[in-house]
Amino acid sequence: MSESVDVLIVGAGFAGLRALYTLREQGLRATVLEASADVGGVWYHNQYPGARCDVESYDYSYSFSPALEQEWCWTERYATQPEILKYINHVAERFDLRRDIRFNTRMASATYDADRARWHVVAADGREWHAQYLIMAVGQLSSPKPTTYPGQDQFAGRIIYSAQWPHEHIDFTGKSVAIIGTGSSGVQMTPVIARQARRLTVFQRTANYSIPAANAPVTQDEDRTVKSNYAERRQRARNSPSGLGFVPNSQSALDVPEDDRVRTFEAAWNRLGFGFALAYKDILLNQESNDTAVAFIHAKIAELVPDPVLREKLTPQGFPFASRRPSVDSGFYQTFSRDNVELVDIRATPIEAITPDAIRTSAKDYPVDILIYATGFDAFTGSLLKPQITGRDGTTLQASWSAGPRTYLGLGVAQFPNLFIICGPGSPSLLSNVLLSTEEQVDWLASLISHCAQNGLNEIEVTDAAQADWVVHVNERSLETLYPKAQSYYMGAEMPGKPQVFMPYSGGVRGYRRILQDVAKRDYAGFVLREV
Ligand code: NAP
Figure 1 (cartoon, rainbow, N blue to C red):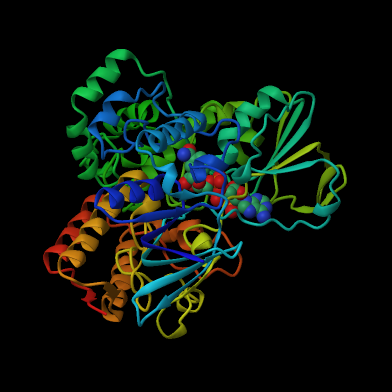
Figure 2: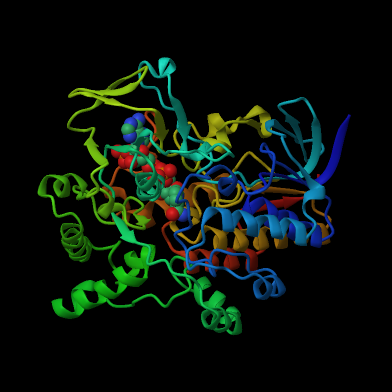
Protein backbone atom coordinates (compact mmCIF):
# COMPACT_ATOMS: atom_id res chain seq x y z
CA MET A 1 0.00 0.00 0.00
CA SER A 2 1.61 3.29 -0.99
CA GLU A 3 0.76 6.84 0.01
CA SER A 4 0.36 9.43 -2.74
CA VAL A 5 1.30 13.05 -2.11
CA ASP A 6 2.14 16.14 -4.11
CA VAL A 7 5.53 16.63 -2.50
CA LEU A 8 7.76 14.28 -0.58
CA ILE A 9 10.45 16.02 1.47
CA VAL A 10 13.38 14.10 2.89
CA GLY A 11 14.75 15.45 6.17
CA ALA A 12 13.09 17.24 9.09
CA GLY A 13 15.84 19.72 9.90
CA PHE A 14 15.55 23.46 9.34
CA ALA A 15 15.23 23.01 5.55
CA GLY A 16 12.67 20.20 5.55
CA LEU A 17 10.44 21.94 8.09
CA ARG A 18 10.52 25.19 6.15
CA ALA A 19 9.67 23.36 2.91
CA LEU A 20 6.81 21.53 4.62
CA TYR A 21 5.38 24.73 6.07
CA THR A 22 5.60 26.72 2.85
CA LEU A 23 4.33 24.08 0.44
CA ARG A 24 1.48 23.17 2.75
CA GLU A 25 0.51 26.85 2.95
CA GLN A 26 0.43 26.73 -0.83
CA GLY A 27 -2.25 24.05 -0.67
CA LEU A 28 -0.04 21.10 -1.54
CA ARG A 29 -0.16 17.74 0.17
CA ALA A 30 3.35 17.34 1.56
CA THR A 31 4.94 14.62 3.68
CA VAL A 32 8.37 14.58 5.28
CA LEU A 33 10.42 11.42 5.77
CA GLU A 34 12.87 11.66 8.65
CA ALA A 35 15.30 8.88 9.57
CA SER A 36 15.58 10.03 13.21
CA ALA A 37 13.05 9.88 15.99
CA ASP A 38 12.44 13.63 16.04
CA VAL A 39 12.91 16.96 14.28
CA GLY A 40 16.14 18.96 14.20
CA GLY A 41 18.50 17.31 11.70
CA VAL A 42 22.08 18.20 12.50
CA TRP A 43 20.95 19.94 15.71
CA TYR A 44 19.27 16.73 16.84
CA HIS A 45 22.41 14.65 16.36
CA ASN A 46 25.25 17.00 17.29
CA GLN A 47 24.48 17.20 21.00
CA TYR A 48 28.12 17.25 22.10
CA PRO A 49 29.13 19.49 25.02
CA GLY A 50 29.80 23.05 23.90
CA ALA A 51 27.88 22.76 20.61
CA ARG A 52 26.53 26.10 19.54
CA CYS A 53 25.93 28.06 16.38
CA ASP A 54 28.59 30.33 14.89
CA VAL A 55 25.98 32.62 13.30
CA GLU A 56 24.18 35.08 15.58
CA SER A 57 20.89 33.72 16.93
CA TYR A 58 18.82 36.54 15.43
CA ASP A 59 20.14 35.69 11.97
CA TYR A 60 20.13 31.92 12.42
CA SER A 61 16.36 31.74 12.82
CA TYR A 62 13.39 31.62 10.47
CA SER A 63 12.23 34.83 8.82
CA PHE A 64 8.93 33.59 7.36
CA SER A 65 6.76 34.51 10.34
CA PRO A 66 6.98 37.99 11.92
CA ALA A 67 4.89 36.66 14.84
CA LEU A 68 7.45 33.90 15.45
CA GLU A 69 10.26 36.43 15.22
CA GLN A 70 8.62 38.59 17.86
CA GLU A 71 7.57 35.88 20.30
CA TRP A 72 10.80 33.87 20.44
CA CYS A 73 13.46 35.15 22.85
CA TRP A 74 17.05 34.04 22.32
CA THR A 75 19.04 34.03 25.54
CA GLU A 76 22.54 34.19 24.04
CA ARG A 77 24.17 35.93 21.11
CA TYR A 78 25.26 32.53 19.76
CA ALA A 79 22.65 29.98 20.72
CA THR A 80 23.61 26.64 22.24
CA GLN A 81 22.53 23.40 20.59
CA PRO A 82 19.84 22.75 23.27
CA GLU A 83 18.34 26.19 22.70
CA ILE A 84 18.33 25.77 18.92
CA LEU A 85 16.71 22.35 19.25
CA LYS A 86 14.10 23.87 21.58
CA TYR A 87 13.42 26.53 18.94
CA ILE A 88 13.03 23.92 16.18
CA ASN A 89 10.63 21.97 18.39
CA HIS A 90 8.70 25.15 19.11
CA VAL A 91 8.36 25.81 15.37
CA ALA A 92 7.21 22.23 14.76
CA GLU A 93 4.54 22.62 17.47
CA ARG A 94 3.45 26.13 16.64
CA PHE A 95 2.85 25.38 12.96
CA ASP A 96 1.55 21.88 13.60
CA LEU A 97 4.22 20.31 11.40
CA ARG A 98 4.62 16.93 13.11
CA ARG A 99 1.39 15.49 11.72
CA ASP A 100 2.99 15.37 8.26
CA ILE A 101 6.34 13.95 9.32
CA ARG A 102 7.05 10.22 9.29
CA PHE A 103 9.78 9.68 11.87
CA ASN A 104 12.15 6.70 12.00
CA THR A 105 11.73 6.49 8.25
CA ARG A 106 14.89 6.34 6.17
CA MET A 107 14.51 6.77 2.42
CA ALA A 108 16.22 3.85 0.69
CA SER A 109 15.45 4.54 -2.95
CA ALA A 110 13.65 6.91 -5.28
CA THR A 111 12.87 6.08 -8.90
CA TYR A 112 11.43 8.45 -11.45
CA ASP A 113 8.47 7.25 -13.46
CA ALA A 114 8.77 9.33 -16.65
CA ASP A 115 5.36 8.23 -17.99
CA ARG A 116 3.57 9.68 -15.00
CA ALA A 117 6.09 12.38 -14.04
CA ARG A 118 6.14 11.06 -10.48
CA TRP A 119 8.69 9.71 -8.05
CA HIS A 120 8.31 6.32 -6.44
CA VAL A 121 10.03 6.34 -3.07
CA VAL A 122 10.72 3.31 -0.89
CA ALA A 123 11.81 3.49 2.74
CA ALA A 124 14.28 1.11 4.37
CA ASP A 125 11.36 -0.71 6.04
CA GLY A 126 9.56 -1.19 2.72
CA ARG A 127 6.89 1.53 3.00
CA GLU A 128 6.22 3.33 -0.28
CA TRP A 129 5.22 6.76 -1.49
CA HIS A 130 4.38 8.28 -4.86
CA ALA A 131 4.98 11.99 -5.24
CA GLN A 132 5.07 14.52 -8.02
CA TYR A 133 8.00 16.36 -6.49
CA LEU A 134 10.84 15.01 -4.40
CA ILE A 135 12.77 17.51 -2.28
CA MET A 136 16.03 16.44 -0.67
CA ALA A 137 16.49 18.53 2.49
CA VAL A 138 19.15 16.24 3.94
CA GLY A 139 21.77 18.81 4.97
CA GLN A 140 25.35 19.31 3.88
CA LEU A 141 27.01 18.01 7.05
CA SER A 142 24.82 15.10 8.05
CA SER A 143 26.70 12.00 6.96
CA PRO A 144 29.43 11.36 9.56
CA LYS A 145 32.76 10.29 8.16
CA PRO A 146 33.56 6.67 9.02
CA THR A 147 36.80 6.07 10.90
CA THR A 148 38.96 3.04 10.47
CA TYR A 149 41.90 2.88 12.83
CA PRO A 150 43.30 -0.63 13.27
CA GLY A 151 42.21 -2.21 16.53
CA GLN A 152 39.23 0.10 16.98
CA ASP A 153 36.87 -2.87 17.38
CA GLN A 154 38.83 -4.13 20.37
CA PHE A 155 38.69 -0.82 22.26
CA ALA A 156 37.25 -1.57 25.70
CA GLY A 157 36.19 1.97 26.53
CA ARG A 158 33.44 4.01 24.98
CA ILE A 159 33.61 5.45 21.44
CA ILE A 160 31.44 8.47 20.66
CA TYR A 161 31.05 10.37 17.40
CA SER A 162 30.46 14.11 17.77
CA ALA A 163 27.93 13.95 14.93
CA GLN A 164 25.96 11.11 16.54
CA TRP A 165 26.16 12.18 20.13
CA PRO A 166 24.14 9.90 22.44
CA HIS A 167 20.94 11.40 23.83
CA GLU A 168 22.03 10.86 27.41
CA HIS A 169 24.27 12.64 29.89
CA ILE A 170 27.91 11.61 29.48
CA ASP A 171 29.86 12.02 32.68
CA PHE A 172 33.53 12.74 32.03
CA THR A 173 34.42 13.09 35.70
CA GLY A 174 37.53 11.11 36.58
CA LYS A 175 37.93 9.86 33.00
CA SER A 176 40.76 9.98 30.50
CA VAL A 177 39.19 11.41 27.38
CA ALA A 178 40.60 11.63 23.87
CA ILE A 179 39.29 13.88 21.11
CA ILE A 180 40.43 13.17 17.56
CA GLY A 181 39.84 16.16 15.28
CA THR A 182 40.15 19.91 15.70
CA GLY A 183 37.53 21.28 13.31
CA SER A 184 34.62 23.30 14.74
CA SER A 185 33.25 20.34 16.71
CA GLY A 186 36.57 19.44 18.36
CA VAL A 187 37.34 23.10 19.03
CA GLN A 188 33.97 23.71 20.68
CA MET A 189 33.97 20.65 22.92
CA THR A 190 37.62 20.88 24.05
CA PRO A 191 37.25 23.63 26.72
CA VAL A 192 34.07 22.11 28.13
CA ILE A 193 35.36 18.55 28.41
CA ALA A 194 38.70 19.80 29.77
CA ARG A 195 36.85 21.28 32.76
CA GLN A 196 35.25 17.91 33.58
CA ALA A 197 37.70 15.17 32.63
CA ARG A 198 40.62 13.96 34.66
CA ARG A 199 42.79 14.03 31.53
CA LEU A 200 42.02 15.29 28.05
CA THR A 201 44.23 14.48 25.08
CA VAL A 202 43.46 16.26 21.82
CA PHE A 203 44.79 14.64 18.65
CA GLN A 204 45.30 17.28 15.99
CA ARG A 205 46.12 16.61 12.36
CA THR A 206 45.76 20.15 11.00
CA ALA A 207 45.82 23.28 13.15
CA ASN A 208 42.63 25.20 12.41
CA TYR A 209 42.04 28.94 12.62
CA SER A 210 39.68 29.86 15.41
CA ILE A 211 38.15 33.22 16.30
CA PRO A 212 36.65 33.97 19.74
CA ALA A 213 32.88 33.73 19.72
CA ALA A 214 32.48 36.82 21.90
CA ASN A 215 29.34 35.18 23.13
CA ALA A 216 27.19 37.03 25.66
CA PRO A 217 23.68 36.92 27.10
CA VAL A 218 21.11 38.83 25.08
CA THR A 219 19.85 41.82 27.10
CA GLN A 220 16.24 42.98 27.02
CA ASP A 221 17.40 46.18 25.35
CA GLU A 222 19.16 44.28 22.55
CA ASP A 223 16.13 42.07 22.09
CA ARG A 224 13.85 45.11 21.79
CA THR A 225 16.22 46.83 19.36
CA VAL A 226 16.53 43.82 17.06
CA LYS A 227 12.81 43.12 17.12
CA SER A 228 11.84 46.69 16.34
CA ASN A 229 13.99 46.58 13.19
CA TYR A 230 13.89 42.91 12.33
CA ALA A 231 12.71 43.35 8.74
CA GLU A 232 15.54 45.78 8.09
CA ARG A 233 18.09 43.38 9.60
CA ARG A 234 16.81 40.54 7.40
CA GLN A 235 17.02 42.77 4.35
CA ARG A 236 20.60 43.68 5.23
CA ALA A 237 21.49 40.00 5.58
CA ARG A 238 19.90 39.15 2.23
CA ASN A 239 21.97 41.85 0.58
CA SER A 240 25.24 40.85 2.18
CA PRO A 241 27.87 38.46 0.83
CA SER A 242 27.25 35.78 3.45
CA GLY A 243 23.78 36.40 4.81
CA LEU A 244 24.92 37.77 8.15
CA GLY A 245 23.08 40.64 9.80
CA PHE A 246 25.87 43.22 10.01
CA VAL A 247 27.16 45.69 7.44
CA PRO A 248 30.34 44.24 5.88
CA ASN A 249 33.38 46.42 5.36
CA SER A 250 33.64 47.53 1.72
CA GLN A 251 37.35 48.46 1.90
CA SER A 252 40.35 46.42 0.87
CA ALA A 253 42.69 45.44 3.70
CA LEU A 254 45.48 46.90 1.58
CA ASP A 255 43.89 50.33 1.20
CA VAL A 256 44.32 51.38 4.81
CA PRO A 257 47.35 52.23 6.97
CA GLU A 258 48.56 49.39 9.17
CA ASP A 259 47.42 51.06 12.41
CA ASP A 260 43.86 51.37 11.10
CA ARG A 261 43.90 47.81 9.87
CA VAL A 262 45.01 46.44 13.22
CA ARG A 263 42.28 48.49 14.96
CA THR A 264 39.68 47.07 12.56
CA PHE A 265 40.94 43.53 13.06
CA GLU A 266 40.97 44.03 16.83
CA ALA A 267 37.33 45.17 16.78
CA ALA A 268 36.36 42.26 14.51
CA TRP A 269 38.27 39.78 16.69
CA ASN A 270 36.40 40.98 19.77
CA ARG A 271 32.98 41.09 18.20
CA LEU A 272 32.39 39.33 14.89
CA GLY A 273 33.30 35.68 15.40
CA PHE A 274 32.97 33.96 12.03
CA GLY A 275 32.37 37.43 10.50
CA PHE A 276 36.05 38.22 11.10
CA ALA A 277 36.57 36.90 7.58
CA LEU A 278 34.55 39.91 6.36
CA ALA A 279 36.58 42.48 8.30
CA TYR A 280 37.75 43.61 4.85
CA LYS A 281 36.07 42.83 1.57
CA ASP A 282 39.02 41.05 0.01
CA ILE A 283 40.32 38.76 2.75
CA LEU A 284 39.05 35.76 0.85
CA LEU A 285 39.93 37.16 -2.55
CA ASN A 286 43.45 38.48 -2.32
CA GLN A 287 46.44 36.62 -0.88
CA GLU A 288 48.17 39.79 0.32
CA SER A 289 45.04 40.94 2.16
CA ASN A 290 44.67 37.49 3.61
CA ASP A 291 48.27 37.61 4.80
CA THR A 292 47.45 40.68 6.90
CA ALA A 293 44.65 38.74 8.64
CA VAL A 294 46.94 35.75 9.12
CA ALA A 295 49.63 37.93 10.72
CA PHE A 296 47.06 39.41 13.10
CA ILE A 297 45.66 36.01 14.11
CA HIS A 298 49.09 34.47 14.54
CA ALA A 299 49.95 37.31 16.93
CA LYS A 300 46.72 36.64 18.85
CA ILE A 301 47.53 32.94 19.14
CA ALA A 302 50.97 33.90 20.42
CA GLU A 303 49.30 35.96 23.18
CA LEU A 304 46.93 33.13 24.07
CA VAL A 305 49.48 30.31 24.03
CA PRO A 306 52.59 31.28 26.01
CA ASP A 307 54.37 27.93 25.59
CA PRO A 308 56.43 28.17 22.35
CA VAL A 309 56.25 24.45 21.48
CA LEU A 310 52.50 24.34 21.98
CA ARG A 311 52.09 27.62 20.13
CA GLU A 312 53.99 26.27 17.14
CA LYS A 313 51.68 23.23 17.00
CA LEU A 314 48.49 25.29 17.35
CA THR A 315 49.38 27.94 14.78
CA PRO A 316 47.77 27.17 11.41
CA GLN A 317 50.21 27.22 8.51
CA GLY A 318 50.16 26.59 4.81
CA PHE A 319 46.71 27.74 3.76
CA PRO A 320 44.95 31.12 3.62
CA PHE A 321 42.82 32.13 6.58
CA ALA A 322 39.17 31.02 6.06
CA SER A 323 39.97 28.96 2.96
CA ARG A 324 39.07 26.11 5.32
CA ARG A 325 36.13 26.98 7.53
CA PRO A 326 37.47 28.68 10.66
CA SER A 327 36.07 27.72 14.03
CA VAL A 328 34.48 30.05 16.52
CA ASP A 329 35.49 29.17 20.04
CA SER A 330 35.08 29.94 23.71
CA GLY A 331 38.54 29.48 25.19
CA PHE A 332 40.02 26.84 22.86
CA TYR A 333 43.62 28.06 22.76
CA GLN A 334 43.68 28.92 26.47
CA THR A 335 42.58 25.37 27.37
CA PHE A 336 45.96 23.94 26.40
CA SER A 337 47.57 25.80 29.32
CA ARG A 338 45.66 23.56 31.73
CA ASP A 339 47.64 20.84 33.51
CA ASN A 340 45.15 18.11 32.58
CA VAL A 341 45.20 18.83 28.82
CA GLU A 342 47.67 17.64 26.20
CA LEU A 343 47.87 18.29 22.46
CA VAL A 344 49.25 15.57 20.22
CA ASP A 345 50.36 16.48 16.71
CA ILE A 346 49.44 13.40 14.71
CA ARG A 347 51.22 14.59 11.60
CA ALA A 348 54.47 14.39 13.57
CA THR A 349 53.51 11.20 15.44
CA PRO A 350 50.65 9.51 13.56
CA ILE A 351 48.05 7.30 15.21
CA GLU A 352 49.01 3.72 14.44
CA ALA A 353 46.29 1.80 16.25
CA ILE A 354 43.65 1.80 18.92
CA THR A 355 44.51 -0.74 21.63
CA PRO A 356 41.91 -1.98 24.16
CA ASP A 357 42.74 0.90 26.52
CA ALA A 358 44.79 3.46 24.61
CA ILE A 359 45.51 5.36 21.43
CA ARG A 360 48.87 4.26 20.10
CA THR A 361 50.86 6.82 18.13
CA SER A 362 54.26 6.28 16.56
CA ALA A 363 55.71 7.85 19.74
CA LYS A 364 53.72 6.36 22.65
CA ASP A 365 50.44 5.03 24.04
CA TYR A 366 47.88 7.48 25.48
CA PRO A 367 45.51 5.73 27.95
CA VAL A 368 41.86 6.46 27.14
CA ASP A 369 38.49 5.66 28.75
CA ILE A 370 36.31 7.66 26.34
CA LEU A 371 37.33 8.21 22.72
CA ILE A 372 35.55 10.98 20.82
CA TYR A 373 35.73 11.18 17.06
CA ALA A 374 35.24 14.80 16.03
CA THR A 375 36.40 13.85 12.56
CA GLY A 376 33.69 15.54 10.53
CA PHE A 377 31.47 14.55 7.66
CA ASP A 378 31.27 13.31 4.12
CA ALA A 379 30.25 16.87 3.29
CA PHE A 380 27.79 18.17 0.69
CA THR A 381 27.20 14.88 -1.14
CA GLY A 382 27.33 12.20 1.59
CA SER A 383 23.63 12.13 2.43
CA LEU A 384 22.52 12.69 -1.16
CA LEU A 385 24.42 9.70 -2.47
CA LYS A 386 23.43 7.22 0.25
CA PRO A 387 19.97 6.39 -1.08
CA GLN A 388 19.62 4.96 -4.57
CA ILE A 389 18.16 7.81 -6.64
CA THR A 390 17.34 6.83 -10.21
CA GLY A 391 16.23 9.45 -12.71
CA ARG A 392 15.39 9.38 -16.40
CA ASP A 393 16.42 6.29 -18.41
CA GLY A 394 17.82 4.49 -15.38
CA THR A 395 20.47 7.16 -14.68
CA THR A 396 21.56 7.02 -11.05
CA LEU A 397 22.72 10.05 -9.09
CA GLN A 398 25.84 8.12 -8.09
CA ALA A 399 26.76 7.58 -11.76
CA SER A 400 25.80 11.09 -12.75
CA TRP A 401 28.03 12.56 -10.03
CA SER A 402 30.91 10.08 -10.31
CA ALA A 403 33.30 12.93 -11.21
CA GLY A 404 31.79 15.26 -8.61
CA PRO A 405 28.36 16.82 -8.10
CA ARG A 406 26.77 18.63 -11.07
CA THR A 407 23.70 20.76 -10.54
CA TYR A 408 21.90 23.77 -11.94
CA LEU A 409 21.77 26.53 -9.28
CA GLY A 410 22.50 23.89 -6.64
CA LEU A 411 18.79 23.10 -6.84
CA GLY A 412 18.14 20.73 -9.73
CA VAL A 413 19.98 18.02 -11.64
CA ALA A 414 19.75 17.21 -15.36
CA GLN A 415 18.14 13.80 -15.97
CA PHE A 416 16.37 14.00 -12.61
CA PRO A 417 13.08 15.79 -13.33
CA ASN A 418 10.97 17.02 -10.40
CA LEU A 419 13.87 16.40 -8.00
CA PHE A 420 15.14 19.35 -5.99
CA ILE A 421 17.89 19.78 -3.45
CA ILE A 422 17.78 22.46 -0.77
CA CYS A 423 21.20 24.09 -0.44
CA GLY A 424 22.75 21.47 -2.68
CA PRO A 425 26.26 21.54 -4.15
CA GLY A 426 26.56 24.58 -6.42
CA SER A 427 24.57 26.88 -4.10
CA PRO A 428 25.93 29.23 -1.41
CA SER A 429 24.94 26.79 1.38
CA LEU A 430 27.92 26.44 3.75
CA LEU A 431 29.57 29.61 2.49
CA SER A 432 26.57 31.52 3.77
CA ASN A 433 24.20 31.75 6.69
CA VAL A 434 22.73 28.44 5.60
CA LEU A 435 19.34 29.12 7.16
CA LEU A 436 18.89 32.28 5.12
CA SER A 437 19.95 30.43 1.96
CA THR A 438 17.55 27.62 2.82
CA GLU A 439 14.59 29.98 3.13
CA GLU A 440 15.43 31.77 -0.11
CA GLN A 441 15.64 28.51 -2.03
CA VAL A 442 12.44 27.12 -0.54
CA ASP A 443 10.53 30.29 -1.44
CA TRP A 444 11.92 30.30 -4.96
CA LEU A 445 11.10 26.63 -5.44
CA ALA A 446 7.59 27.15 -4.09
CA SER A 447 7.06 29.90 -6.70
CA LEU A 448 8.34 27.61 -9.46
CA ILE A 449 5.98 24.82 -8.38
CA SER A 450 3.09 27.25 -8.15
CA HIS A 451 3.89 28.66 -11.61
CA CYS A 452 3.73 25.14 -13.05
CA ALA A 453 0.46 24.34 -11.27
CA GLN A 454 -1.13 27.53 -12.61
CA ASN A 455 -0.07 26.64 -16.13
CA GLY A 456 -1.10 22.98 -16.05
CA LEU A 457 2.50 21.74 -16.16
CA ASN A 458 3.67 18.80 -14.09
CA GLU A 459 7.28 18.20 -15.05
CA ILE A 460 10.30 20.43 -14.32
CA GLU A 461 13.61 19.36 -15.80
CA VAL A 462 17.03 20.97 -15.85
CA THR A 463 18.60 21.13 -19.31
CA ASP A 464 22.06 19.62 -19.86
CA ALA A 465 23.28 22.95 -21.23
CA ALA A 466 22.11 24.99 -18.24
CA GLN A 467 23.72 22.53 -15.86
CA ALA A 468 27.01 22.50 -17.80
CA ASP A 469 27.10 26.32 -17.82
CA TRP A 470 26.35 26.50 -14.09
CA VAL A 471 29.11 24.02 -13.24
CA VAL A 472 31.57 26.17 -15.22
CA HIS A 473 30.28 29.34 -13.53
CA VAL A 474 30.61 27.84 -10.03
CA ASN A 475 34.14 26.78 -10.82
CA GLU A 476 35.08 30.14 -12.33
CA ARG A 477 33.74 32.04 -9.32
CA SER A 478 35.72 29.77 -6.98
CA LEU A 479 38.91 30.58 -8.90
CA GLU A 480 38.38 34.27 -8.07
CA THR A 481 38.75 33.32 -4.39
CA LEU A 482 41.41 31.76 -2.18
CA TYR A 483 39.27 28.70 -1.35
CA PRO A 484 40.94 26.39 -3.87
CA LYS A 485 44.31 27.03 -2.19
CA ALA A 486 43.39 24.74 0.70
CA GLN A 487 42.60 21.08 1.08
CA SER A 488 39.16 21.27 2.65
CA TYR A 489 35.69 19.83 2.56
CA TYR A 490 34.73 22.72 0.28
CA MET A 491 37.00 21.00 -2.24
CA GLY A 492 35.94 17.41 -1.51
CA ALA A 493 39.31 16.77 0.17
CA GLU A 494 37.89 15.43 3.43
CA MET A 495 37.24 11.90 2.17
CA PRO A 496 39.90 9.72 0.54
CA GLY A 497 38.90 9.01 -3.05
CA LYS A 498 36.22 11.70 -3.26
CA PRO A 499 36.30 13.71 -6.51
CA GLN A 500 38.01 17.02 -5.79
CA VAL A 501 35.79 19.78 -7.14
CA PHE A 502 34.70 23.00 -5.51
CA MET A 503 31.34 22.19 -3.93
CA PRO A 504 29.54 25.38 -2.83
CA TYR A 505 28.84 28.58 -4.80
CA SER A 506 31.19 31.40 -3.84
CA GLY A 507 29.39 34.21 -5.68
CA GLY A 508 27.68 35.34 -2.48
CA VAL A 509 24.14 35.37 -1.17
CA ARG A 510 23.13 38.58 -2.93
CA GLY A 511 24.65 37.57 -6.26
CA TYR A 512 23.00 34.17 -6.09
CA ARG A 513 19.60 35.67 -5.27
CA ARG A 514 19.86 37.99 -8.28
CA ILE A 515 20.55 34.99 -10.48
CA LEU A 516 17.51 33.16 -9.08
CA GLN A 517 15.35 36.23 -9.70
CA ASP A 518 16.68 36.57 -13.22
CA VAL A 519 16.05 32.88 -14.01
CA ALA A 520 12.44 33.24 -12.81
CA LYS A 521 11.96 36.42 -14.84
CA ARG A 522 13.19 34.63 -17.97
CA ASP A 523 10.42 32.01 -17.63
CA TYR A 524 12.64 29.76 -15.57
CA ALA A 525 15.42 29.66 -18.14
CA GLY A 526 17.49 26.49 -17.89
CA PHE A 527 14.47 24.39 -16.93
CA VAL A 528 12.09 22.72 -19.34
CA LEU A 529 8.57 22.94 -17.94
CA ARG A 530 6.13 20.60 -19.62
CA GLU A 531 2.91 18.66 -19.26
CA VAL A 532 3.31 14.89 -19.24
P1 NAP B 1 35.67 19.17 10.29
O1 NAP B 1 35.71 20.63 10.27
O2 NAP B 1 35.68 18.46 9.00
O3 NAP B 1 36.89 18.72 11.18
C1 NAP B 1 37.26 17.38 11.27
C2 NAP B 1 38.54 17.29 12.05
O4 NAP B 1 38.89 15.94 12.17
C3 NAP B 1 39.71 17.97 11.35
O5 NAP B 1 40.56 18.50 12.32
C4 NAP B 1 40.37 16.81 10.61
O6 NAP B 1 41.72 16.97 10.33
C5 NAP B 1 40.19 15.72 11.63
N1 NAP B 1 40.18 14.40 11.03
C6 NAP B 1 39.37 13.95 10.07
N2 NAP B 1 39.63 12.66 9.80
C7 NAP B 1 40.66 12.31 10.60
C8 NAP B 1 41.37 11.13 10.79
N3 NAP B 1 41.10 10.03 10.10
N4 NAP B 1 42.36 11.12 11.72
C9 NAP B 1 42.63 12.23 12.43
N5 NAP B 1 41.99 13.38 12.31
C10 NAP B 1 41.01 13.42 11.39
O7 NAP B 1 34.41 18.60 11.10
P2 NAP B 1 33.60 19.29 12.28
O8 NAP B 1 34.50 19.81 13.31
O9 NAP B 1 32.56 18.33 12.70
O10 NAP B 1 32.94 20.53 11.60
C11 NAP B 1 32.34 20.42 10.32
C12 NAP B 1 31.58 21.65 10.00
O11 NAP B 1 30.37 21.61 10.72
C13 NAP B 1 32.20 22.96 10.38
O12 NAP B 1 33.15 23.42 9.48
C14 NAP B 1 31.00 23.85 10.42
O13 NAP B 1 30.62 24.21 9.11
C15 NAP B 1 29.97 22.90 11.00
N6 NAP B 1 29.97 23.07 12.45
C16 NAP B 1 29.59 24.25 12.90
C17 NAP B 1 29.60 24.47 14.23
C18 NAP B 1 29.19 25.78 14.69
O14 NAP B 1 29.92 26.45 15.35
N7 NAP B 1 28.03 26.21 14.32
C19 NAP B 1 30.01 23.50 15.13
C20 NAP B 1 30.40 22.30 14.63
C21 NAP B 1 30.39 22.09 13.28
P3 NAP B 1 42.17 17.58 8.91
O15 NAP B 1 41.78 19.01 8.99
O16 NAP B 1 43.61 17.32 8.85
O17 NAP B 1 41.38 16.84 7.87
